[in-house]
Amino acid sequence: MPAGPFARMEKALEIESQSRHPVHQVGALLCGQDTGKAPFETGHANFWPPALAENFAPDEKLGNASTTVHAEIAVLLNAPGTEGAELYVTDLPCPNCAKAIAEARIGSVFIDSHAHETPLGVKMEPYFSGISRPLLEYAGVNLFELNRKERTVKPLIEVSESAVIPIEKPVEMTLIGRNEMTEEKFEELIESAQDRFPGEAFVVCFAHTRLGSRTALTVRPHRTIGIDEEKAGRLAPLLEKYNLTLQPLNRALITAARYGLSIDPEFLYSSRVPTAREFVNLIGAEITALRLGDRTTSRDEWGLKALGQLEEKGVLQVG
Image 1: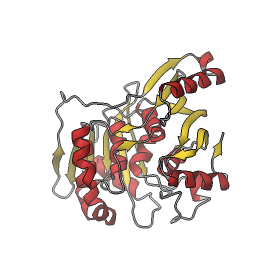
Image 2: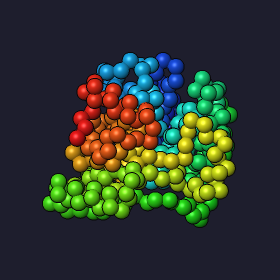
Image 3: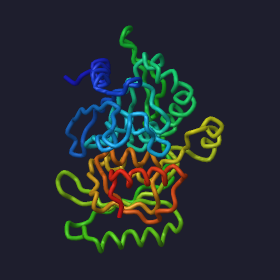
């Protein structure tokens, strides 16, 4: 029989113990079906990608970002599919993780009741209650709190199955033949995106499934799924260091996980310099090569600084 929610949270807590973070250990367990409808279960703790751990001190920033990949992101990046899956997390998801969870089309998130009392939970509580929780609700993600001592499941968000969730800028996905996965086809896709989205950030990449089919993706930044102008205005006073936009490289990584795709690092292009957090997640996905368009433009100065650090230390090959 499939494991129940309490057994799955216990597994997430076991995964949490694998974290090497000295203060904030977090574990995440993802349970769902892959794109072939086969059930899977995979877990991950927050971690330092080896390429960053070897070149940066644990407390050294990449741009303005820590070099740790959050547990929620780590487990999504390693998933064979995320649509409708259940995510068990031992701490409170930050707003950036909530955006990724929404993009991945996770069906339900389960948090442990003790998460409110951990050092990270105490720090994250205002952001979780004020931003992460509304983002999950707007995106149609159910949220439950498990009390392992009392064996209770408390619904924090329950979304109607008939809810219609708006998407601002859908990812463009096109099936391509094996013989079309060429430099010429890739340049054609980049030029098309440049013509259609002048001055806008975007990512173009090729990806493939485990069965060998090929897909071309064109990805632009967009506000988190389910956010309209009214909801954006409602959240604006709370944002401080967070924002409602999911950047294109992060979005490409999550979209690939949603459909069980592997991005081909030889065919990955960003029209501008990614943010520092995008770089951390990219390297967390074991991708250390990127083609760049405009090397002088990023969302902020920290992306440019991160690029310089990665090139100086030889962590990222930039074309």
